[in-house]
Image 1 (cartoon, rainbow, N blue to C red):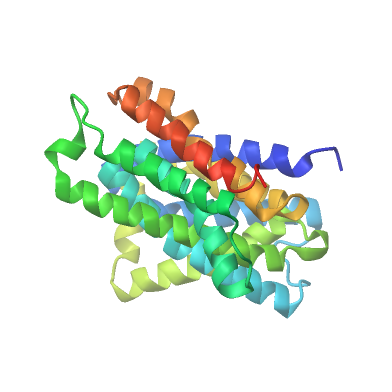
Image 2: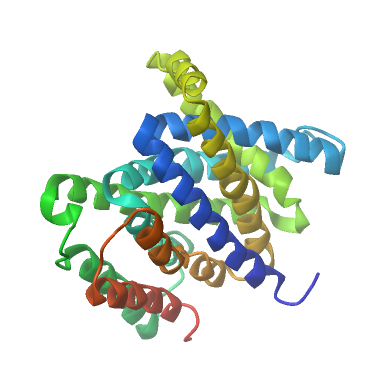
Length: 302
């Protein structure tokens, strides 16, 4: 492997998630967040089956050990089914940039999970980093802006923030679980497919029970342009992006990988300005960089 394989993979993960978040935010505003969430899993599985068939000679990695299937399936359920369901709701309520900003707290929760369940202690610097991250998030959320959903729809913002934090917890849990399933150099595309299968079963089974499965497919057929946008977002999100995230956690420490994957809020600021016409002042810009600095402090400064 090339030097810094994990770090480069994590950086490209951030770029992919920024692209997919933009596509999913626009799509979710048109046809609903949960419809988009179900469709992107369907599209991702079809693409991943084809990729695994071409590169590994089998459409589904049935040769993987039961332990690997268990870890990666749990990871898919926690990170992709539960965590992303909250993330998509956050996108719809507070926008992609704010949703991604809250998602950048994932490394903080990774640290807390390791402390609570693995017995890893937190240093003073790590505690300072967590406070910086939380302070930056709070600054951005409560900063007064000339034209802002925060001032107009406080209930939506509160729900969006809650959903964003839950999404960050879900992603942190999913990464910790996937780390266990990706040992011994397991192929990232194969690992991603196992995670997607678990998430797909969970979300579509729920959709069937709620009698929303047919509605989802009908909505997709009635909105071909939006469906095409979901397809585009799925290439960069659950297919390439998630696979790169699994590659990253194979070659670099989980905390460093999580930190580099937390960069989408910074990447998203110009995207939000030019594509979603978001207005934000120096408080939002400074708060964003304080958040990223706090997350980075957890792992870069030891």
